[in-house]
Each structure stands twice: as C-alpha cells, then as structure tokens.
Image (cartoon, helix red, strand yellow):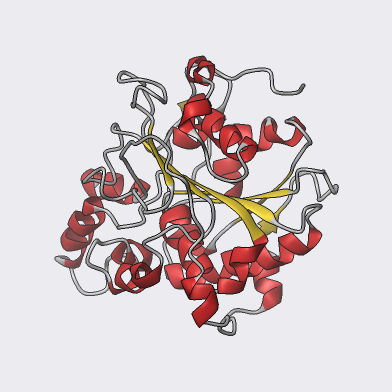
Length: 319
C-alpha cells in the first residue's frame, strides 16, 4: 500500500532538456472550435479561487497558479531552507501559499497579483471537470488583470492536463494567456499512473482514481488532448528534472513541441548534479529563476539568458 500511495502521491510530471526553441502559438484549435458550455455552475468555479492579497491592479498583471494531484504529507524545503511545503494535501493553498510564487513574486519588477485555484477532491476527480475550473477562471481573472491577460503556472497534472486541456478545448482562453510555465507537467502521461492503476484495479473495478486513470499514457483523455495540443498553444516553458521518479519515462513525458523545454540538470540550466525532484520543484530556486526568465522574455524562457545564480538559492528581486 505504501508503494501505491507513493505512486499516486505525485502523479504529475516530467523531464528532458534542450536549448530553448522559439516558442510558437498554435491557433488551429482556436480557429476550428468555439468554447463549449460549462457543466459546472459559475458560482462553484468562482468560489474555488484564492487571491491571498486581493487583486490590486499591479502592473505585471495576474499570475494564475494551478496545483497538481493528491495528498502530500512530506516536509519539503529548498537548499536555502527558506520555503517549505507543510500541507497535508496538494491543493491551492497547500501548494502555493508558502512558496516563492506567493511570497516573492508580488514584489518582483512591476509587481504581480497572485491567485490560485483549488480543484475538486485534491484533483483526484475527473481532469476534464478540473480543466473547466481552470478555463472559467482564466476568463474571470483576465478581466480583472491590469494587463487584461493572465500568466499561468501549473504543476504536474495542473500543467500537463488541466491547463493544456483548458487552452485546447476552451480556445477563447488562448488570447487571454500571456505565457504558460509548466513545472513537471505530464503532457503525455506517466508510466507510474499505468502501474498504479493496474495495481488498484486488480483489487476491483473502479478503484483507480479518475484523474490517475486519465494520466495513463494510453488514456483516451490524453489521446483527445494531443490531437491538437501536443504543440504549445501559447508561449510555453516546460521545466523538468531527471530526479523525478513519478513520471517516467523521460524525456518523453514532459516535452512539448514548440515550447522551451528545459531539463534542470542540463549545463545551460543548473548542471548535472542539481538536486530537485518532482515534489520539491514548485519550491525550488532554480525553477523559480527560470520562471522569472520566462516573464522577462515575453512568456517563454530563453535558456541562453538564464541567470544561473538562481541555482544557488533565492536572490534579492525587489529592485
């Protein structure tokens, strides 16, 4: 049971490294489809949003954060000991409240408003419905943002399934997103999901959580998503680590055509021995430094201009 729990705990994301390609925008879905109606009430989806400091109209606009799958009872920290994940579950507050995207980012550069979503059932439920929460709130938050757009950040399922599905199947969201930063996003599923669901379903039908089933590499969910969304739909950065044991095999699971695909252990990023895994990635200084690089470069990171001092710890970014 401990193995199954560990496999399910992460079920998220990623790995491969390249120098940054020029990110492109795929407008095929936007041109071919209009948004379907939501199956969930707007009041319910709006209530899932937390903006811890409110929306103050900061010049950088709103950064919208989407968490990953399942429970996490670990105490995680960066090498500086500055940020910790003390949550008992992977939800919006537990993932983002004590990390750099909430504690540092609001005062960086022009300043940013921070908001996150908490998905139903800690994102164990139907990923298609979780994507509705994401799509609805991209629209709602963009209307409140000083830039009239949002920059989206997702971890694991939050990136690889929920955000990418929202951008694909609710194509009006694409013009409202200035950039997409994926942290260990499982765009192509996970072999760990394959193993976990096989073990769980051997105990009886319908015992594999729905979103885990959808993260299997052969799932109909991913087949449908990757018909038109195997390519970046907005300026996209996908970062991942070769120390991620929950989303094998790499590099295939997190690489997406047209994105800036960056392995944290590449020489251009933080180097061969860099110690960051799947669970610590949202709290990691090097990952956060690449995120700031993406903001500075108009949406997608440019590894050629990455400041590698971020690999040594968090920097003073208030000036």
